[in-house]
Length: 168
Image 1 (cartoon, rainbow, N blue to C red):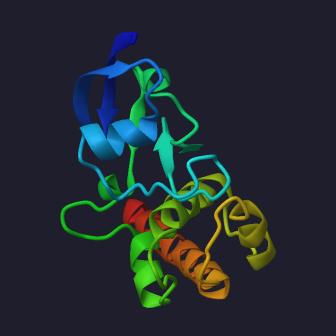
Image 2: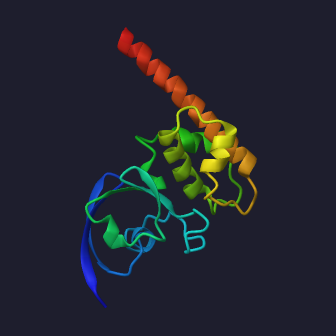
Image 3: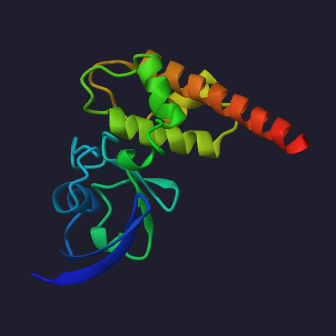
């Protein structure tokens, strides 16, 4: 068994771990670092439950080797909240009741955060298209779309408030 040392930053915290070169980022996060918010769904890259951000871009952690994260920044669902306040997407998922069993929720939230970083003011059709890699076995799709659109509106309101503060 071949092992390698991996240095990465996870949710803002530098980490150094030694892993089997075949170990997935998903298994590193869940089993070695105890960050169980990232879900193991299909373990084949088909469901999106394991979505994390690698240097700010969405990545399926089940298809990413831990060694590939060496020198990079990883954000999991546990790393979204700041100072006890939920990320606007997390809050919107709660407000819109955009989950049922919860198996897909972390991946849905992580994809939604990335989507809102990628697209300003998305339409419902754009949300459905850009979230299509995340499956929900409970069928909460309409409420997931509502939550993403609500979070986009909250982000627009926050941006407007920031702009007003800068002008003052």
